[in-house]
Picture: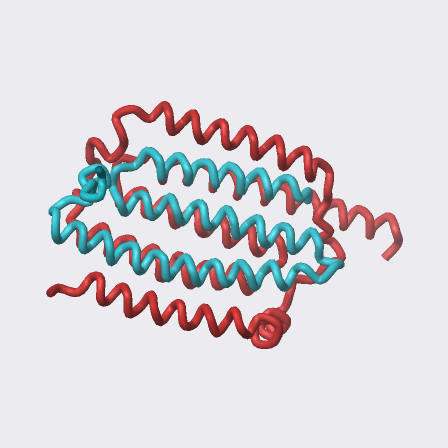
Amino acid sequence: MYLVQFLLLSSVLFCIGVYGVLVRRNAVLVLMSIELILNAVNINFVAFGAYNRELGAAIPGEVFALFIIAVAAAEVGVGLAMVLTIYRNRKSIDIHEVDLLKG
Amino acid sequence: MTTVTLMTTALGAVVAQNVFFYMIAAIMVFAALRVVTSDNIVHAALYLVVVLAGVAAQFVLLGAEFLGVTQVLVYIGAVVVLFLFGIMLTRAKVGSEANLDHQNRWPAILTAVMLLLVMAYAVIDFAGDEEIEVINASPTSVQEVSDAIFSTYIVAFEAISVLLLAALIGAIVVARKE
């Protein structure tokens, strides 16, 4: 297997996630697109770790991916709590209606 | 085994790995496109499950078995259920729904395609023919991973446990009714 296969796959996933963040109006769908981006990064970490296996990089690559999974779980928890609060106060989670800080 | 049979076995393993990689990658890209284009929120969440399972399969293909299991446990088991709860509590429609997307999506498509072109050029230029050695490499064991976490990366591990506690309390405080 070539390293570039995995890097291209993760690039495609990352760009699909960026498109989702830019185009979606529902806040839950924006959070899902952020998950796509974080998973693309994880593929890169593990692929580079496997590529540099002789240098002992496989373990650090996996450990960093594990930490990213933990941070992503925390981010989803707090993000969905914020979405719920916005829904409770404004009866909508359209991110274009949340513009209180707009000057 | 003679050298010839060894070489044919190795070649067969490489071909099998490539076949599985491209099959899983095609499913993942299709499901990811459906996540960002589907007009039904519940379907988008279920397509996200397919993408996350594909990522777990790629981890196993790269010899990171523990990470693949963790991906299934944490993402498919917990994060997707959290998303479904979020969809339910914000009372999204169960069927398909209009205007989940912006009116004009061309700037977003342009941004994503340009970004993909730049990244693909950089990646191919940097790692055009670098091979990952998978034939003689054994998958990393859980023991090695846990040894690394609890010795070299112990400070990061403690920091992340404090972060998870803070996120837990923060989520409760933010979502609590007054």
